[in-house]
Length: 189
Image (cartoon, rainbow, N blue to C red; front, side):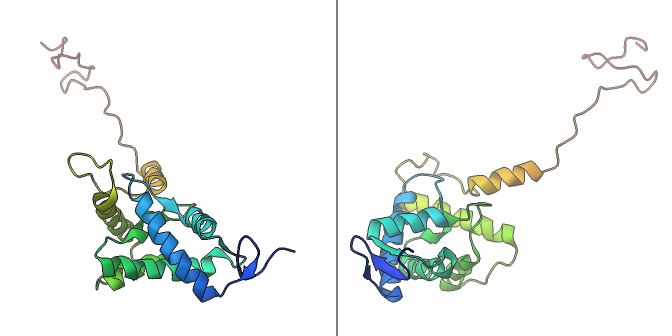
């Protein structure tokens, strides 16, 4: 059976959860600032967790959802303290490309009311991501860029949009024959 709890590699020496979270928050801040250097880039919770564990050499057997929120909460507060945009807006779920429920902390820390409607929250996060890119990105468009939903979410919403019906042929109102491209009825003129 593998190691349990929190430990440092190499060697497997035990680490407290509090110490791991503190180190991971520092790594997460650096990692998210790096993600923000690429316009419209995002990272999944799982990718971020893997990266910060690898970079810090501190690992855990604890399930991701039981610790990532605490780590990202520290990042939210640190970004606010530094005057940086909320870097945690760059972190999305693998399945749907949406920010998590913990995004509420971004709003609370900024003194804003929580957004209950998921799409409202996603639009807020898209705007916050644009602020991140404007602060850190090297490849920002000359016009300053635009806020965008995470690619996976944007694609899912595009698939759900009703298709606009194609306009049928134009018909003469007098004799009910299809009009030529000129729009003038050959039969009635």
